Length: 242
Image 1 (cartoon, helix red, strand yellow):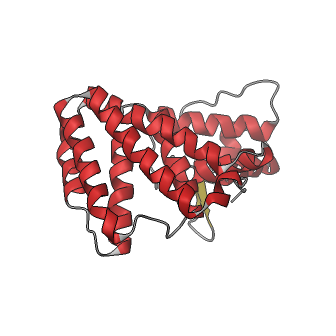
Image 2: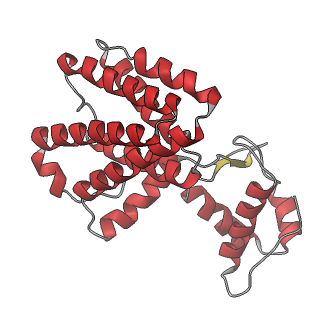
């Protein structure tokens, strides 16, 4: 790993944690990569064992590393996870008394914009996968339907070319669906959802950014209206820390 860059004015543990994150990013360490041993990092940073363990604990709590116990264990890079980011965000959402209505409104803003960006980028490797997800959505099996639908929205977000929007959107989707688990369109309406996804996919493939955005907005507004009808009290519920 590169030489540490410790910022002054921070607690030692926070400063070490920041430098570890910087190195993970600058060196492109993928998920599953072991970090140096405790002994190596103590020598590298010249800090006490307590400060180093505080740094690793900060990163573990934020979901950026995991600590493998036992002989041969140690800190391992877990990568950027929308689920972990969403879990951390719920702490702030609860403290700020933010509701599921606000969460849904945020998704209604972001997802159409990401469909527009996806049409502008038109990633050739992703277009065929997007079409296959949309057109091949199973309608009878609940779990398969939910997986295909979720994968479609996540792929559109990843095709936007904006990592920050992708992370935020995926995190909000994870938070929302964890709360409304099992609440999805009935089988009689799933063909319409599949057709809506296919239309969005075609607009993205055609590079029609305006149409992709409007179709995604219409699709999301329909789902939001459905959730409000089925669980009206949910909209005023505070997003709880998970």
